[in-house]
Length: 168
Image (spheres, rainbow, N blue to C red):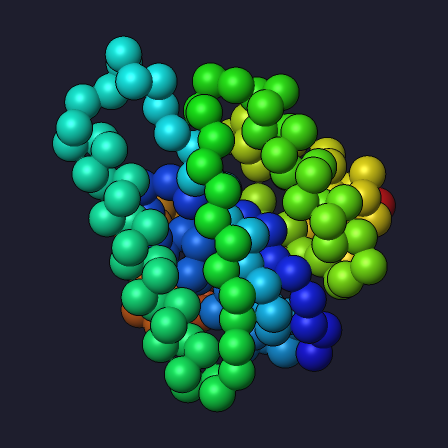
């Protein structure tokens, strides 16, 4: 199993981020030593308090999940949260590139499953540019399971794909 830095983006579903990590771990593909987690914040003038609270709750739920994951594995996994403006695509790309350069000497996995489409596209592009070791996408074959923890999703409805390996 490879170990290294896991890059991802979180939106309103904490399961989208935790499911990717757990699927990669259970498949014997990847165990994170660090999780670089980008939170995309909507523009202040276009968002209400409920949306902000959903994003905060999602991140808090992921932090709780990661704490349990670390306890079960009996290992340290450092969480590096980074907040970006959702409507600043270039700013997101620069922040992501900066973190990839910071961890240039470590194995890197990109998870393009969670978050906005533009963020997944930029993450894949920058991961390829930086020579990421894996680019994961957790494909759910039934949308009914999108808000479910991985262990509640039948195996026949989930497929972890390393796009770097499978799409060349």
